[in-house]
Length: 247
Ligand SMILES: [Zn+2]
Image (tube, rainbow, N blue to C red):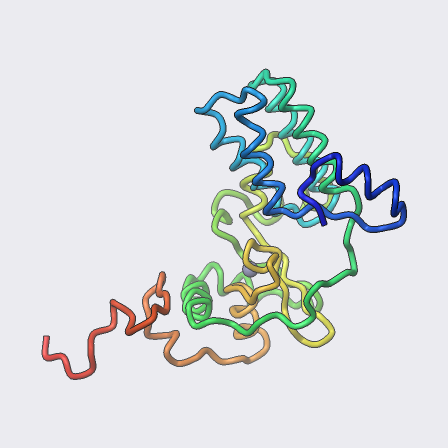
């Protein structure tokens, strides 16, 4: 696992030609940040470049990733006009997707859901569109959950792009990547989602919502009474008054 520095990847490829090389997402992003000023990317464009590169993390398959990365490189080429940065970015994106890690899992048992996640899942199901979307699915292996941008893309279009990821623009990919998420049910019964939280192998609101909607799991009763955005602090949650308060 390296940060995408060519000296490291080339050396490993020479000494251990059969080793699976991965680029650490966190360090790759750090590299992008460090390299932008060095390669002359103007200050006012750096945030956007960083956000665009981050959006690629949500690509669930290699074909989607390649299609979106190609669009991103085109944007950089046409609008940024920073050749030295484009070649660096292109190399890093190729390195990053050098080999698929399909079938390899780094953690077999995701940590259990936190209360804040249950609260979000409860509110997710309170929206009738989300609830009926989940309840109408009869598949047993992979479920689909509505993401934060589901209102901006119909599911039929999303699935067409999934089968053939010929995105019209990079921004179409960005909407696509947050419109719907795939939730896989694994052999041990656990659910793993393609959303940003699920990618880290944490239990997310979508997998909890599916457990409740499809597998008769039950919410922690506390989750139903807490507001959206609840976070467990070190002490009592701010929005919940003390039990004996007369106000
Ligand atoms: Zn999720």
